[in-house]
Length: 493
Ligand code: NAI
Ligand code: MG
Image (cartoon, rainbow, N blue to C red; front, side, top):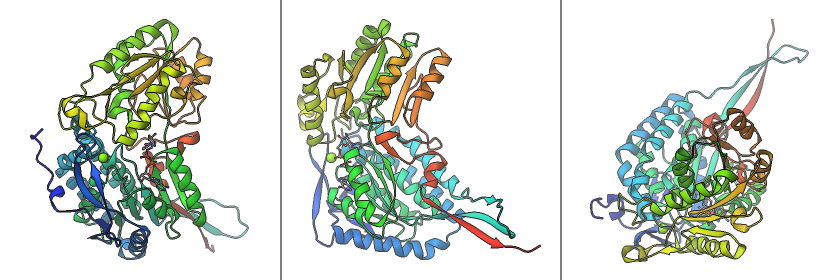
């Protein structure tokens, strides 16, 4: 695994917080270790930000918001984003390597995000000069011109998970720079390195001190940020339970909140679908990133006539995926992020058969040689799953597919919607009427037809129901970082 040069970023000693344009230790001096998901080795030591560090990061963000940053022209913010895109591209191999070393996503998959990250930064750059209000007619008895101004919401607290660290950092910081907000970003404890390096690149791109602050730490750091009275908005991606805690904590100062939470997304296969086309897509819709994906299509509903064929072929596809160390370019399935995540996933793999599901493939940890050092799990297929089983209801966040048979259109739509979540869904059919009716009736923020998993910065993504609220992607993403001011001017004619 020596073909990748170790990122120089890792050789400059323990990682520090980024506050007000400077790298600083936590005031307490406390640190924590980042452990490689694949090898179990310590990748780096990171500063553990306490509430007092969150305080000074928020103060820096506030000062920057009210300072020179507020006078940057849209085109100047755009120029910074364009420069940032160039720097991220220059450093991309190292950024991808940091993610892979830390949270374990296979290196080929991490590197495969290059285009998406570039398009995202270009998208935010484009948005910077497109922000606009409206001129509105009014019927007030005297003559008044009314229009709206769009203004940045202020200091943003952004809290991100570990399953796509660089991507998440870009999707949280990009709209901040596009709109003129400032941010305190709290990466996940399992994946703080690429966000920190991205923060340094922001400075290099010309982002003024205090506009982008990064506080690494654990849940307590996020809790301090989400309760902070001087934070105007929280943008969160992560588990539903933590999201609920953040909403409660944010109530004290009535923060604006956007939530991108988990899911248990249905992927529906009708008997007339192109089975050859859907097998890889449906399988990777569950197994990609070892299932650690919020929009994973983990409830695969298959119409009875093709049920056994799809079960067998998804299992076969999963079994043929190459499980290996994260840094091996041939690896398709890497480890789960942590021992804790393995405990969660393995408890569901044990639960499946107890609940009466039929284990078709996988269902076990994969060990031997290098694999002993991480928590590798074989792509797992459970068939004959019933709606009421916990494996069909709860987010597992591992490479575990629950495949459920169905007989009828109305029945499957009803069952697909019988979940507290509503992040995404898939439909496979050659019948356009069936597809379009299903699209309308699935209660989820994204629906793919004859595909699973396309994402683009120009297209909104987010949750219905308990999968959250607010959208990332599309102009709604930018909107979520803006306030609207109604302006009235008395005129005389
Ligand atoms: P988590 O939701 O607890 O962590 C996400 C982020 O929230 C991290 O930065 C964490 O430090 C922070 N955080 C934790 N407690 C907090 C609090 N009280 N206040 C503010 N911030 C807090 O997710 P975790 O524990 O890493 O994973 C547990 C499960 O959550 C997974 O098994 C999976 O089911 C789900 N999950 C879903 C994700 C998604 O993208 N929808 C991403 C990560 C996890
Ligand atoms: Mg780790």
